[in-house]
Every structure is written in structure tokens, then in C-alpha cells.
Image (cartoon, rainbow, N blue to C red):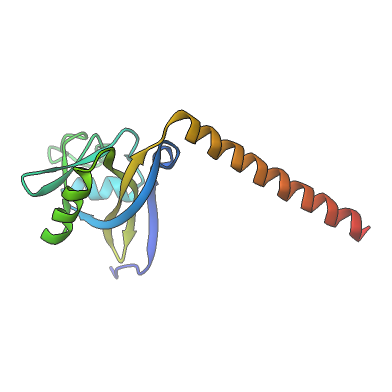
Length: 159
């Protein structure tokens, strides 16, 4: 079977962009077992409440739930086990330095297939306060109202 080219999204963490300011993002591989890959290809992965930690010069994703593969047998692994992220040593050092700054954390933003391999987009994020979230909602509403007004004006001019 030939490997498919391009990027195919598997799962996104929409809540992360709502709760955090994403300062920077890094693409990294994930060390997975065979049945986990098959389950992820079916889209049975949940990124809610997941986060990453730098421990012993390794980056591990915690609380990322991968449902057990239905056709798997005894080889299914624990759905909540920590998954190791594949990064270069220099990238890990850079992430560790940024996380040690006040208020920064590592949040998985999305999982996708890239040229037949599972990749994870890891965001270096800073938490939002409640007023920041309100500002974002107000800005989105204002933008939607402007687009609606523009559409109604163009419809009236065409008639």
C-alpha cells in the first residue's frame, strides 16, 4: 500500500485556543504502539485537558486519550499512558527554557497525518484571563456583525 502524501487532520484541541494565547507552535512526532496508530487513523483521539511536560530531557504528553482499537487484542495499551514526543535535543532545551518562564505551558493543539506519519502540533501557550476571553468573544461578534451588514448592503445594491 502506497503512503498517502499531504496532511490529513485527525483531531484538534479547539479549547486550547479559547483558553490560551498561542505564542509559538512546534511540529513533533509521537512515539506510539501499533494499535494506537490504527485507532488514531480512525480519529479516536481526544486532546481535551491534555498537556505536555519536559521531564529528564524528554517531552511527554499527559492526559491524551487514545481509545483502544476495536480489532486489537491483548496488544491494546492503556488509553491514558504518557506518550513521548520526538524532538531534537536543541528543541527540547528551547521548550524547557520557555516553559520555565512565568505562565507558559505546553499544550497539544492538533494531531494530523503527514506523509503517512502521525504528527502533533505543540503550542507554547500563556493562559488567558477572563477579560481576555470576553474581549475575544466581543471581537468575534463585532466581526460577524460587520460581515452581516456588508452582505445585506451588497444584496440591497444588486436589486
